[in-house]
Image (cartoon, rainbow, N blue to C red):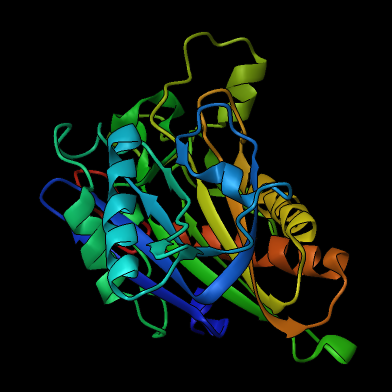
Length: 319
């Protein structure tokens, strides 16, 4: 399974800094992609998201950047724009070429070095490394310093990372593909929807692997439990043709997959974001695409923790 690169026209590149435990992931859209976005968390950090609104003049985006480093990591998008401009890719305004590159960040400054973050050079390197190969998963790119179960503090969290999955639809939609990539850095626990059980998240203590039920703790009125070291970033792509209005709806429907696998989710200290990309000419109902997207997001989030190694003093399910 190639993950997000299963969609023709999508290339993915990562750069990871394992000393500072941060990094960035770049998704390039060959020929441009119709895009829509949905933000459910209240602590998001984004750049150029208005270009994806249906009433914006930009008809397409040329890339997406996901980065660690909190707001500082937004700098990585400058490098991607510089790379794309050198390739002649972008929105043409007279003699000028302006690449349209929305970006979103997660907070990983409490895991590695708080004074190192993805910069313009890292973004440019990630763009140059982008390929159609199967997406690298685990503690790479924007997931290098990602953690889950941050509600009780980073010391009791678990390692997470990047996960990616794709779905081939059936019947009259047999030529339609939907894929997702997730950088998972949640305040909540990760729950396997097939069992309803948490598989990674907040541990009862720093030397325990037993998980605490964060949602139950909040409902019991436990105060001061949430900290702002979070945010899950998701990109969904399809080879079905969508308008910007439909792309935005697809992003909204894909959030269902986030809600099924993270508990609690969309909190005041999460910046949960989904970006949906449309590349191709296949026809499919946006509702059918939304069902597939939610499932691809579920699988991506589960893979992000299942493939995460122990790193930075935090245990990962991949050992």
